Image 1 (cartoon, helix red, strand yellow):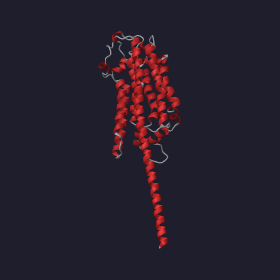
Image 2: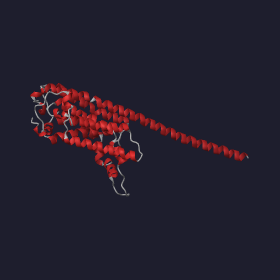
Image 3: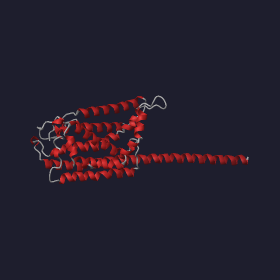
Image 4: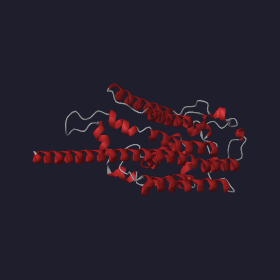
Length: 317
């Protein structure tokens, strides 16, 4: 497989973590990440200037999410990922299962809805109104529904890696960028309804969200096991790794399978913890609302009783 379309050289030295983390930016992802951080920062500053608060925890989560994208796309991990299946699988797992969760915990849509200016005149559509229209569109209802997101999540593994599509995309820089964008987008639409931090058209109850989360994860594990148990290299791109790497294609594929299998546990635990915290906070809010309603009812009863006593007193006089 010729990787010249991606500007790759075939004489990479054997992989080490130190080499993998050296700076080697993909211009597309570098610009996209910097623009994302800039827009988020603009939203936070805009809220602060008008005296509104924004959670520091959300800001930290979003920044970490974008930095994880930069970690796998703007270092030599991206270069090694073109010739080593195991390194590519680290990229895939991070950008599709860790980055989306952190970005979504940053609540970027909520921030946009609060920071974007409202249309100056009634009936006109400003940026905020257009975003709301998009969020409530039929298109968004379809792509955030579990009947769409779960099959898409699964197909992104099996249909991509076990067909010629993967080799075709890996043959050019544009194809590789498109594939990585696809992984990030799939992760975002899969976890968005489950996380429930930002508003969206599909918002099931907490128990249903947990079921959605665990519906896709076993397929991830099976995919990893299939790679680990294969007796021959299954992906053409990685069948003949460069001799300078000093690796065996089959053992590298087995390592890739192990990474896919093990990594599926990480987002499950992260999302489950987030869901349990959200559920607890929701129950507390509901309890406070119930208490306030009970207090109001109690006050009305007390007023009625006092009025009754006053009427009896007036009659007695």
